[in-house]
Amino acid sequence: MIPEPTLKLINDTLSEHCISAYLYLLMRYVANDEKPFTFLLSDVKKHIGICTTTRSNDEVINNILFVL
Image (cartoon, rainbow, N blue to C red):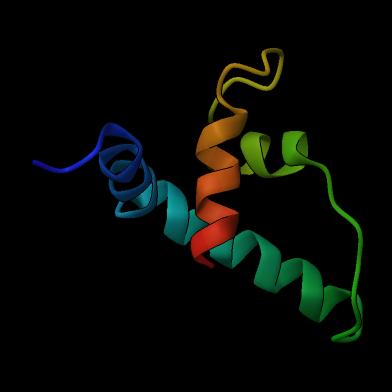
């Protein structure tokens, strides 16, 4: 029916993690005088409360960033 990658994308991005990541990036953007800035995936992971010591959850953050 629905391909597994599509389901994963939907699951990762229709969650409170996506909203938290958006708010974190928005706050960083405003704090940087509304200019582009560089961030690490680990910064976003830390803010939304997922493990920062593994790369196995990078796909979650990448999916969120893709949708945002």
